[in-house]
Each structure stands twice: as structure tokens, then as C-alpha cells.
Length: 295
Image (tube, rainbow, N blue to C red; front, side, top):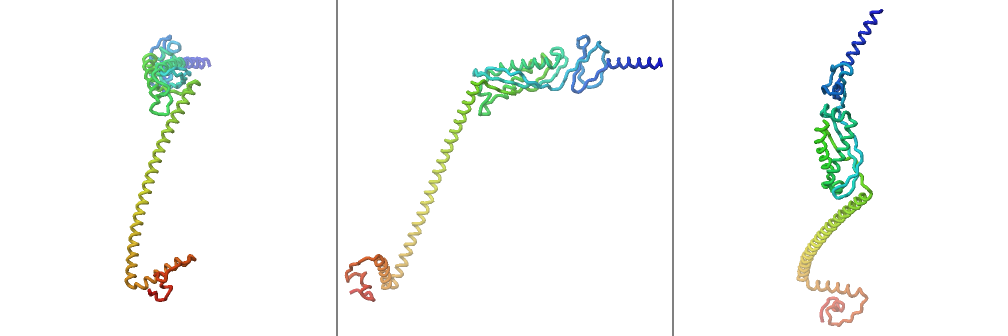
């Protein structure tokens, strides 16, 4: 029984020694080994590794994944002296774990440093832009993406060399305006919209006038063409009528005169009119005798 306890104790000591002398590195971590606070080596490949036991060598883990945080709101002046309140989001990750560990130690300190740097860059970059570059009804006038790219570039220049950090993305998360600026923006947008509406109305009236003039011209052309065609048809009809009259008259002159007289009688006698005619009148000759012979 005594030997069993001795063996068990030896196993515990061996396991404790192994536990204190090994460490694992996952895909999401860097490990910086330090000896009494001084870095000795950096491990970036996942796996199982050996180290000096216990406090002789310490494994300090650094998250290698992309971190995201939001900066504190800050009020700044634009190039046209308009105040604006901005909040940004920042995406970053560790590229040099040893430099990061020596300069910042952990992610909380890194977040604070990066927030201050981004806000500082905002102050210097925004001075070159106006309110019309932040909010505008014309998309090409909005320069927010340009501002974000410049802040990202300027921030990365410092963070890579000084802290071993790569800033992946910087974006403007929220834009707020003081009341005076908000009213000015609203009035400017309203003025631009009214100007745009007046432009469209003027173009609409101009187009309507063109369409109306074109329609009137087409109507005049159609009416003129129809009138011309009607006159031609009327002339042809009159010509045909005269031809028929002439042929009928030449075939039986007496009958033609009789029929014409009957038509005249029909027109004048149907009006309850009183006629005073000479007995020598041609109109009276068919009423005076059936043969219509002149005296």
C-alpha cells in the first residue's frame, strides 16, 4: 500500500511538471512567452509546445481575430465652420504580436489608443471638407468614403509601426448635427428640391408646348388635306353633274325644262307664297297649258 501512494505521488508530480511545462496554441491566438516579464519567443502556429515550468516562463495569449469597437461621439468643425458630431466604428487585428505585447499589452488598451487616434485623424481630415460633402442630394458630391479611406490610411501608418496593429476598416457609423446645422441642412435640401422641381416643371411645360404645337400642326395639315380632297371630289362631282345635265338636256330638251319647272314649283309653292306672274312668264307656261307651249 505504501508503494502505491509513492507511485501515485510520483505520477502527480510528473503530471504537474508536464502541465507546467507545456502549453497549446489555437488557431485564434498568438502566444508570447516571457521570462520574468521579458519576452523570449513568439508562437503563431497552432499546436502543443514546451516551455520552462511554472513561473520560469509564462505564456501570454493574444487574440489574433478581428476586433470591432465604436469610438466615443466627438463634435468637430468642418472646413466651412459647421459643427458636426460623428461616431465611427473601427475594425482591427494584431499583425506583430511581440510589438503589440511590448507596446499595448492587451486589447482594452489597444481599443482606447485606436479610438483616440481615429478621432484625432477625424479632426484633421474633416477640416478639408464642407457640410455639402457629408450630406447632399447629389451622390457625386458626398465624400464620406473618401474621408473614411484617408482616416484608415493615416491611422495604419502609425499603428503598424508603433503598435503592431493593422486597422482593417474605419467607417462613419453615425452622423448628428446640432439644431442650427440641422435646420440649415433641412432648408438647403428643401431649396435644392424646390429648384429641382421647378426645373422639371419648366421642362414639362416646354415638352407640353412642343407636343401641343405638333398636334395643332398635324390637325391643320389633316384638315387642309381633307379640305383639299373634299374640294377635288366636289369639283369632280360638279363636273360629273354638269355632264349628266348636259347629256340629259341634249336628249330631251322639253322634258328637261318640264322637270326643272316642276322642281321650281315644288320649292316656291310649298311655302304658302302668293305669286304675281305675267302670263308671258316661262314659269307660268306649264300652269297655263299642259303642253307648256309659249304664246
